[in-house]
Image (tube, rainbow, N blue to C red):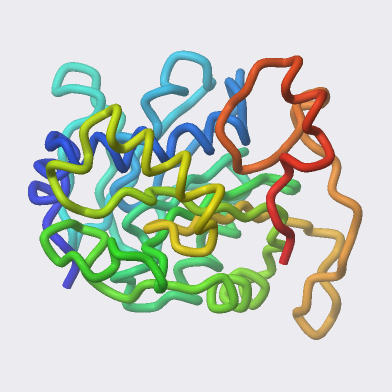
Length: 262
């Protein structure tokens, strides 16, 4: 049984939830930019993470599994929320260019079936971003937050899940180095923990983030995705799950600012 949507919503209205959202969005924004004129889907409880693209994307939909429940997004008068079966999405094939999965995999009953359904509704060369509780992080042990429920993941486990579902992982990062305590999740304190954690303890972030791409033409008969050269869909913007920087700093650090590859 999934964590109730109202409980997750209360978490994101709290100081800890705001810190989790902010630290994660820094990386997602650096990865996908404005996603202008793209169709986006948020699966699980991803509405807090879709907000930056609600004005620039051509379509933004928050899909919530029935076993979790749903809350209106962005508000009751302008609903962009859909509620339905966990692994049977009411969308046609290849509809979305981007999919964000948050609070999605940890409590899923059928992981592989869910990811194959995400693959179905994703356009060719479309990309997904997975945000999940990190097995080695402190937040996976804090059952007072939604990240402390269900199964946490390691990079190896997520890599296996994604490749089995015919996705190719292309970028990795971690976020939320601040401990899951209310007094450490203030804006300045959380920023300090984030800066120190990224430099000194990069393997122990509370969340693990993965980007993966759907390569239709790179699927071998046995079901194993072939390695191909990935071309960024946004053109000039460099890809990478790292916080946004100025254009000058991006050029100076282009060789070191990319995230690790699997």
